[in-house]
Amino acid sequence: MMERMRLNKYLAHCGICSRREADRLIEQGRVLVNGRPAATGQSVGDTDEVTVSGKVVQTSKKTVVLAYNKPVGVTCTEKDPHADKKITDMIKYPVRVTYAGRLDKDSEGLLLLTNDGDLIQAMMRGSGHHEKEYVVKVDRELSEEALNKMTNGIYLKDLDITTKPCKIEQTGKYTFRIILTQGLNRQVRRMCAACGYQVKGLKRIRVMHVVLGDLKPGEYVELSAGDVERLYRDSGVGTGGNHDKR
Image (tube, rainbow, N blue to C red; front, side, top):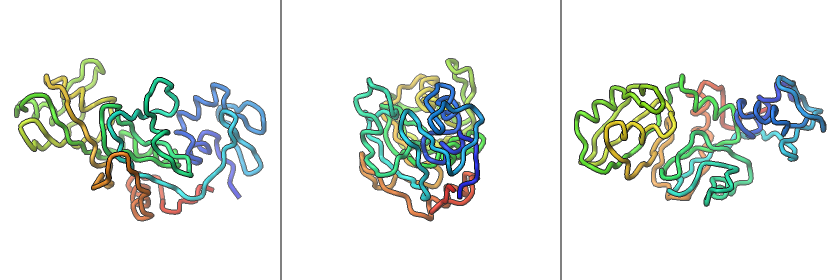
């Protein structure tokens, strides 16, 4: 038996979207409960039929988390009709999954996808200070001054925000590794631009404890129960593995 829960939480549990996005779908009238338009704050239980855009929502008992090596050219979107290659076209998996944290079209590397919207929300929450690591190549030789500016936090004029301090290790004349604990839009590219550099290559190689490893571009793998359990624990959501959403 499923205890009654708020509709936005239910949709997140089912892996449809985050709670915030669920509220937007409800406001847009795209969510029906027993054939009637849902209301914000509404609760649902076992006997209720919930549909989103005409499709019946069903719970899944097992939490699935995929590690995917996103190639350059794939867009993190599910609906954009102008995108040549959407993430939903690349991932053919029997359980519906949604990405946790975007990588822009020109970037590549590790992307986590899961069917638990609560886990996505917890991993992406800025207050969690969850680490994401990238390898970066820029268009000209790096200076110690620029690296120090980015390390200590740099003001981004277009966002009117100063980035949080981060860890940076120079690996070559034009390359460095950077570990961020926040997720501003195109943050690495903006930070480099603020120092007069253009990013020529950007790859995410780690999210929290999950590493890209030898996963080839375009390939994905389901994380082990132990890895999923650790994601739940480190995100503060609770237990994972065969996470029972009921």
